Each structure stands twice: as structure tokens, then as C-alpha cells.
Length: 443
Image (cartoon, rainbow, N blue to C red; front, side, top):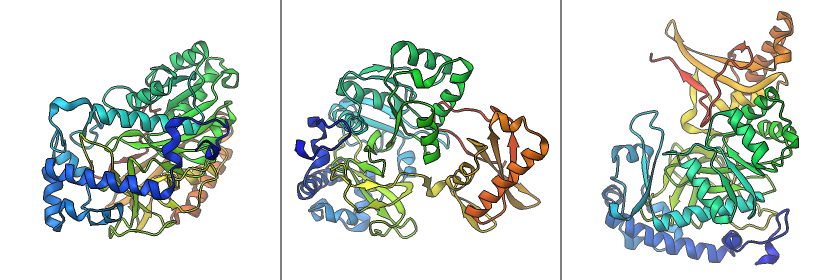
């Protein structure tokens, strides 16, 4: 197995063996786990049993991973409707950890883990960290939020399992974060990418040169981010920035991650089986076509999830990865089907707005999209910060920048959208997932 290991450090860790399995062996494991999962879910979760019965599907109909298309979907609303423990498949006495979503659109989604589930989760996070080049002895400053959010404690467990020294900084208090980075000798930092952009900006205020810190790897997730944000991070530090993928309903961080090729996210599909489906019809799409990512948890006992519709839009990369891993890759998540809004009959995604902003050098990654209704018509305004040097220029120069941003958005989206330039630091920074869209149409 070691001869297949081809990361930049040239070494091999036994935990990564699953990433390099022959495809036939991987499919055998997937099939074996799916058969067991379906029976467990059918026998112990009323919603899964009801949905399968409605489709006329019994556990014995599932004989291999190819039969996954016979199974019903699970939606986020299902998890809310069964709040708090209706999706659990084991007695509460076997649950060793509970997590929950933020509950910003109603009651939170509660997720439970058995001891065995925690071992799988920690091992998955560890495999992702190994992809990034993190090794035993690294000092990881974990600035994902702790508590009910899966990010902080999720990454923490995998890092400890790898043998790293974990600094549980959690989010916020940026001055203290910078002090810890400098004084504790952190070599790895993990947080949302938008928050780390804020950390870099604040470092100038406190006279800290990020390039003089020992940081070498950044682990970023919990929100979509652009290649320009990656370049900004890497240009202002000595770090290499990696994307880690996960979602609370499945397992938090550790569902997948980037290898050093930085060309897609390897999904750890022995634990989390991916499908790409047409979001309208629910039919499978061929490799390379963009559709909705659907995930089945193949190795989860407490809360088995069948074909969970993530609303993340991506595609399968068919080509083999030069890193040698056989677990498949998806293209980086840059947009979600449920983030879309419609203006004058045109579908618009926040990621398109961000891509347009990043084409204009004077703009920054700090922006917000305001949806309003004026005279019975829906309107959208993009507020964006520009660099301090640009903002201090004359009115005519600012207007020139505003028009170039507006033209860039028009070029990508296809409709004219109002742009408003705001002064630096006016838009609130987020310690967790950044909120981009503010919909005031129903207020």
C-alpha cells in the first residue's frame, strides 16, 4: 500500500489505507455496509420504515451498493419533524454524544452518536488531516466553535487521535487568537475561511506579521469559499489552505477533504456514500454533470441516514487523482440549490455574486446581499467593502470602482444589480458560518 502514497511529505499512515483501496474492494465494503445499514434503519427508525414501505422496498431487496437507487430520500425537514430523537436507531443509553444545528430556521436538528460512531467520526477527521499534511506533533489551533455545533469538537477528536497537540481556542476574541498563534507556536489552524480572512486583517492592527508565525496548514470549512480567498490566505501567510467538507446532519467535518492536488474534495465513501442527482427529478446524473449531492451514512448506528439531500451543488470528477487515492472526488462546493434567489426571472446564487466581486481588485471578501420588495417588485442590492486605500480615494474613483463591480456582476449573472460601496469594517464579521443573504421581502 505504501507505494501508492504520493503526498508531498512522502510518508504513509496506516489510517489512510482505506483511501487507496482497489475499487472492487471498496465496492464490496460499501455493499456490505449498505445491506446492514438498511436493515438497521428499517427495523429501528419508523420514518425510514414508513418511506420504504410506501415505495414497496424491503431490506432484503438491497443486495449491493447498486441498489441504493431503490431507497427513499431523507430531507432536512424530516429531521426537524422528528425532533429531538425520532431518527435515532438505538436506545438513548447507547448515545454518548449529542450535537445540534443552530436552529436559525426553527427547531434545531439533533444528531446522536454511539461510541462506535465517534470512533468512525474521529478516524474520518484524522484521514482528512493526513490528506492536508498534518502529522503527529503538530500544534492545531482549533478555532471552530465548540458546543452543540459539530465543527469544534468534531475536528478536535480527529486531531487528538492523530497525535496532535490541540489548542481548543474556539471562535471569537481575535486579539487572543493572534496571541495564541504567536505564543503557543501553532502550526495548523482550523476555522471558517471568512473568519481567518478577518484574523489576517486584524493582525495588522496588532503589529503581528503572519508570515513570521510557524503556521503551515490551514483547515477551512463550514461555508463555501472561493479560490481568491485561498490565494488571499496563502499570500498573507506561509500556510497552504485546505478545504474540509462536512455537514451536521451527516457527521460534521470529516466527510471529505482536499488532497495536495487541490483539485476536488475526496469523499470518504466507505463511510459516506455520494450520489449526484438532478435536483428537480431526483434521477442520477453522469459523472461530470452538476447536480445535488446526496449522501448515505454507511457506518453510523445511532442515526442512520438514507440518501440525504444536502442541497449542495457539485459534480463527480471521473478522472483518477494523481495523489493515488481511489475514493472519488467531487468539485468544491461553491453553491447550494436552496441558497438561490430569483430576481426578474433569473436564478441567482450568492457564489456568482462573490465570483464577480473577486474579479475587481479593489473589492474585499466582505459583502452582503439585501433582498427587498419595493412597489411590489423584488430588488437586490449588494453591499461590498473595498480596501481602505480605495475608500480614501475621491468620490469619482469610488464611483468608478462601483461601476466596475456592477459590470462584473452583470457579466456573470446577466441582470443589472444595484451595488453599494460601504466603508471598511462596516459589515459584521462572523466567527462561525458567515451570513451573506438578508431577505427583507416578507418583513
